[in-house]
Every structure is written in C-alpha cells, then in structure tokens.
Amino acid sequence: MDRVSGKLTIYFEDPFWVGVFERIENRKLSVAKVTFGGEPKDYEVLEFINRNYYHLQFSPAVKTVVKDTKKNPKRAQRDAKKQTLETGVGTKSQQALKLQQEQNKLERKVRSREQRDAESQRLFELKQMKKREKHKGH
Image (cartoon, rainbow, N blue to C red):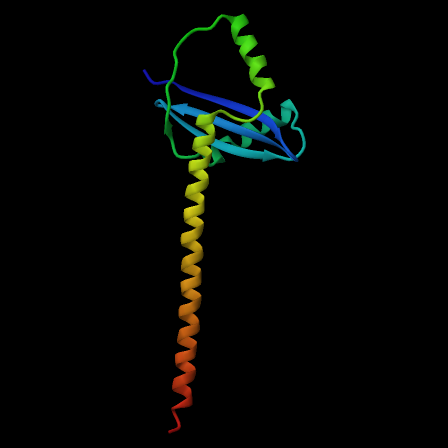
C-alpha cells in the first residue's frame, strides 16, 4: 500500500524566510521551495498552504526510502525539536531542488536561444530586403 506524506520546513536564509515543501508519493520525493518575506506567522502559513498548495511547482520525483515505523511520542517530540534547531533542508530535498533548478535553466536556455535565433533571422531578412530594394532600379 502506497502512502502519501508531506512535510513543510521553514527556515531563515538571509535575508528571507524560506519554506520547503516535501512530498513523498509512491516512494518518490518531490520538493517545492517558496520564499516568504518576513517571518510568517502560523496562521499565515496555514492560509498559504490552503490557497497555494496545488499551484506549487514541485521538482521532478527522486526515488527515496520510506521507513514505516511507529515512533514513541516522546521520541517524535525530541526529533521535532532537533529538526527545528537544524538549519537548511535534507540532502534528498536539496537534490530534488537542484534537479528542478537545472530543468528550469535548460528551459530558459532553449527559450533564449530561440529568441536570439528569431531576432538574427529577422535582421537577416531585413538586410536582404534592403539589398533587393537597392538593386530594383538597375
């Protein structure tokens, strides 16, 4: 049976507060990064999740190991406290974000190359048209 789980980590990355949404679905981890302005309050985070979760752009899925163990509540509380003291995001999340960043970079490169080629083609056509206009009278 496949489970879906999600996790939100909010941390301070100078000068902004950043939220990292981690989603594990079918044993694959995908991540989305959101930059908040100032320190978000709990109700602001909840409102953001309710309004924008389905509009988030998650990274491509990365295979991950999902542990299916039940934790002692005290242990879970200690782990939660430990995670709040840590800064940054997990390495799997970083890999997923890096993969998404690389994909966006490639898409941007392709788009800019197409624009550059279209512009150079337009200028070439303009030169050719001017050349033809020059020789029309002869």
